[in-house]
Amino acid sequence: MENDKEKDNEAFPLRFSLFHGVPPFLRIIEHGKEYKPSMPEELTLFTMLAPSGISPIIVKTIKAAGFNVVQKSANYDVRLLQGPLRNNEESQVGAVWDCLPVTEKTKDEINFHRLNYQSKINQFPGLFIIGRKDQLWISYSKMVQQFGNEHFNFLPLTYLLPKDRDLLISDMERKPRVWIMKPPNWFCGIGITLISSKEEIPEKKNVICVQEYIDRPLLIKGLKFDLRLYVLLTSLDPVRVYIYEEGLVRFATQEYTNDPKDMKNTFIHLTNYSVNKNNEEFIHNKNPGQFEGHKWNLKTLWRYFEEQLGIDWRPLWEKTKDICTKTVLCGHEHMSREYNKSIKSEYNCYKLFGFDVFYDKDLKPWILEVNNIPSLHINDIDAFVNFPMIAEMFSLVGFHYPRDIGLKYQRVISEKLGIKKSSNGLGITNAHYTRERTKREQDKIDRYKDTGNCPDETMLGDLTPWDLRVLMHSEDEFAATKEWTRMMPSKDKDYVQFLTNYSYSDKLLGTWELKYGTSRERRKEGVKLLQEMALENKHIEPVVKKNRGSLYISDALYLSLK
Image (cartoon, rainbow, N blue to C red; front, side, top):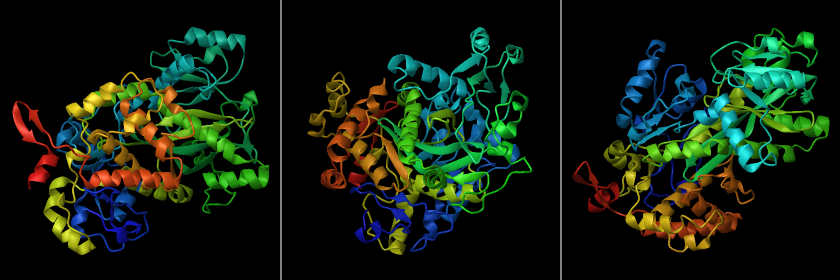
């Protein structure tokens, strides 16, 4: 279903795929803007399931788009996520925004294998491997051992108590310095304290992270600061990672000093908004772009670097994006293994992370932690950054209309929007996202299994339906980016060397990007090639599969027989 006239209209209610036969995506516009033409009432039947306590940024964005957010009261949260979602994953269609702290455990609370192919959730299996501070350090340490400090030297030295207690004491005695102690799965600065002597080490059985404190921070107006950056993972097979070009700069509220007598002053040493907002000296910044208040947007920081400090921020930003990408890859081996065991549809998962990044006096970027449940506040500066970020993210990851509703209402929606009726309907079909492979597809995958990590253009010579779907998903996603920058796959940096589980799809997409991702003109050539094959429906191979002993017809075959 396509309409060339409407494709470039960013206020149109649907975002059309670049490719024939792929159902359209629901366009999510930024809060405060309006659709043109208006959103048909039938499209608003799309629903997002979420617990109460969800960020107003999410609620307002979804509701402003005309869709429904199904929330429950505070005393119903657990039943919502452990009942309707966690015991009935197969029955949920539409979107799910999962944001309860149970996702911070060291096991998955969601049965991903049972997810309905029409459901899209902001989770992947195994995310705790980088979202918990202890697990991130363990995963990072493995990467250091395998690839060396040349590539992995951006996480402060960390000891995990009680296991590393003796090592920490030995280090303290050898080189006296300050350490910052953090619970592994808490957030908003809860439970954080600074220590400098072995007598302050707690005697607890629960895991505690003790991290080397970076005591030479880059200061602005005498204040310590860090960055909240947004990283988006849209696929694990192949890996696709994005970073948002805006972010938040969060300041401490008292002038920095490393005087021991002020070591316990959290307004000096912590930059968390949840901590510093309690200081009566905290100033809200109501004017994005101005050098005022205790929270800025990232592009204001870059302008401050240029105008006040005489620093070219661009190389620093490239280093920052690089370590964010490598941090995601620290968890890739575990996450991809769980993903391949559990996920049946490429449509099901995406994840927004909040990365906390710190700059020292030498302009070296450090990763402080990864937040699986980033706070999305609605204060002035936060709203300025988060509303467009979330709207673009939702459009980028691509929500489809549920299949049955799409079939039922496609005639009236098509008439209201003035678009051509499609034989495939408005709604999602499993055939476009299934992870099941035909014999032909698996045979090709097996042929390239032991051919190394280097790009191989022979892969592009005989593209299977699986190949085409991988490349089409990637191009549709890339076409929706504005402020989200794709970091992986990359034509400029060799991130695949850090993939211990380097899949066939990673190699395929990497080869494609090296051939067609080097310029806008080359990408147009690649997209045109895929479009020609999509017109012949080569991306879908009708198959009849066995399900619990009985035959059922795939979506593709079902639609071709209608």
